[in-house]
Image (cartoon, rainbow, N blue to C red):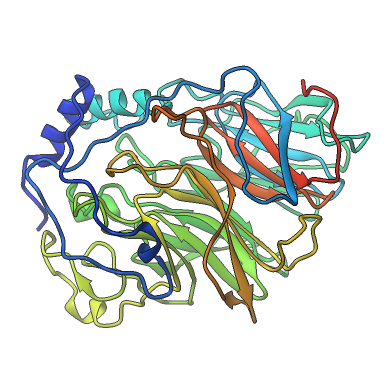
Length: 447
């Protein structure tokens, strides 16, 4: 039914006790694992797969990410947050930040393997208790710094996605979508929540982040829900309703699977009338497999997981229970490099203030833990033309890794704010970074 090799337990045990277990370094030019036609090497399922975790250390005073584009500059928009993961801009320009981490009882019944996993995640900067709140940031004087920082919502349950529809704010907790009444300009919501729909979670909750976006007409929500494993090794019953994007009717609460076979879809954004998502693919097939990707999402489509990857490339570790489904598996639109953990996704039609950047997609790459050399730890931009990718990725931000390979920061959510600047949530630095045109001067320090 699924892989019975003891590799994952061995892999995680070595990580937990501080031993870096690495297979051979990648010999592939990273650029070949990006784009509409990425290079797909032969699988390399070695005895002990690569474990190459960057210690999360935070930013030394005065340090920040770098940009290679002379037309852009980077500065802090807000500091002293608690594991900021996702961003959402309200109509009046206020910015909501989901300060969140894995649930307290995350993978509670997973035994020694899950206990070790927690130790590994702690090393990577994801071991602290979840703040379980949404914070509001306001830059009233438009100087590029949030002078107001208030607790907007508290006592949530590992919140992630947020979207406003009319006067109702929807929040995706790890186990349910909930809603709250919202009035423009308020800095705190004290009203109780209304549960819209439960989401797959439970004591085994491997990919805990749940994201949401609304349809253009405001009648539906789309929720991205990751798998409960790498390749269904926890059994197929644990994957019911997962590795998918749900479509939810707001009025009735009814839902259906909009697209499936997406191992861990996280970011979602609209490109015209088409939904796009960023997907983290499977592990343990070598340094250069499988590329994470972004893709347009077709109604009713299947994208391969767990049976195949990048279309119809069979994963021989998995029992092929649905060969007819695999024959229909769609190839993603654009590869984003193997193990880059591409999470953040935001499309712009070019209406922003970033010089030398036009239409296209911003991608926040959280960074690898299982590749040699490390990959990701960047914010990229992929140009679009006619609502399709039309060029090589442009590096917007880098420098999240120090010269000795420690993680000073890790980018997650990306968002264009009302001023037309790019905001980037950094969950290791506990900072929201602002990327603006270099002719915009900032002289203040954020709160």
